[in-house]
Image (cartoon, one colour):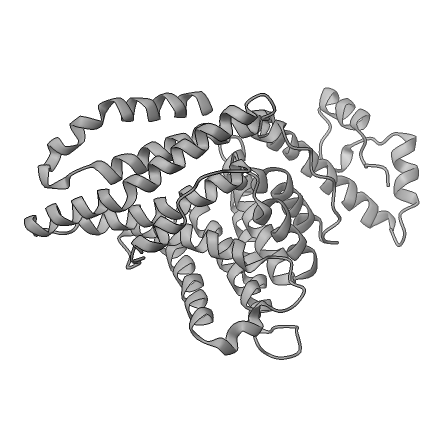
Length: 395
């Protein structure tokens, strides 16, 4: 179906200063409107005004989002195709904005099956996911256009995002699977999206509450064998991807708000899982993230310990537990980079630098002796400089 108004009509209107329903259409646009099934003249005029307004606002959106689409991260990915998600114009706009801008930015410099594929597939079939995606997309667009849009437009976007969030909740309260039982992966996926929704508004406490509720669902699932049926079905999001995201969110919540979340390091498990070879950037990332989450939690618990003797002993245990693993990871990662440096994409190169920075952070947390007080960090000046250099190159 042809776009109405076309680019020529918009350019002509911009040059003449036309606005509202005064936009003059070319013959092609008039014909396209007349051929729309079920369109009345009044509805056609309304559609023209709405589309024109969206496109004119959309020009600002495209300009504001230019950094995201021209960055090495986005440039190395094919542009998402246009998907007809909803018959509601505003919903469709926010959903498509999420596909083009929000999902790539949430994925970052790494391939993310969750953000780039699974959550989009789930949104096509699950109303609760679709409305949550629209809510996140609307808020993200509001942030990108906040400096150039009027307060009235911003308030309208906020109201729309809240309405979409409420619709998502209503679908969760009244499941459509016929059993009356909530789908585990559906609940976890909406928890992740609601966490993003609150974080975009700056509501860190509420975001962490959503993440914690999701992690509690995971714990119940793991402890009760009868809950295994929650992982059966055609829902697009895989449980292992949700576990990774939930653990990441819980670690962040502990660092930001000192929430209760403890993962007791298992020395035997870490030793067995010591890396020796990587086949991909993603494989290297998953291993490092597992240990970095553990060492971060271990470190935060040490920092809160005011018993000097316990602090000294625990610091030594921390180093003995994590240092060998981190050394093995660095050796395996160096071999991987040497073997693949000529075939790595720009996105993979950026991802490799991010991983190296994370590895240095893990080394610092593993080696630092908190019993030395503020002076403990002086020994790591060169490593902090290396992190800054890597971050500058990536950005």
